Length: 219
Image (cartoon, rainbow, N blue to C red):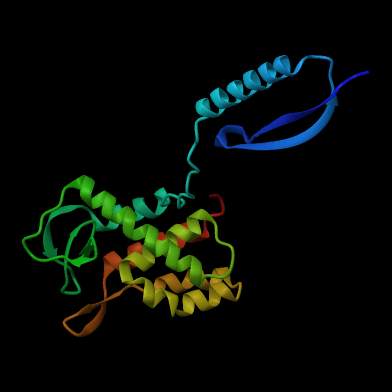
């Protein structure tokens, strides 16, 4: 008559490249003619292979979600109209700026005498644009194309994201009036010059370029 032995069935579930393993030890009664010593040898070998496999498993860290890169359209339009300056200078509104019209570097106001490299200016521009895009995403409730987001980010970079968030432009946008919102770009072509808001040809051209980018269909 067959002797019944209590044997451990070892089940290994591997979760792909994540490198985790779940071990389930279940006790099952099985019929076997082999002596206890041979059964123990088989169990020992199986446990040894299990230990080796677990040791060789490599845990692959989960990648955190990366923010979407800043659109090249926004970067290009800002670079075109701001230009690059390695030394701080006084902007038309009286503030010291540097690089691509940056009024702050690493959240610190720019001061006359500050200097910056091209790589540093581009890194800071990307950082600030990413923050602007994230803030605009919380304000704009309708779907925007990449070019529309870029035009809006360029405007917000120039005049201040808080002003745009509370603007008629965003109100029209959230109401679904895309064409009306596009025309609102043209109203932001004035600068505070010694206490008076004056229309500047450079700002007029910039607003026209942003409006055109906003209305482009592809991208």
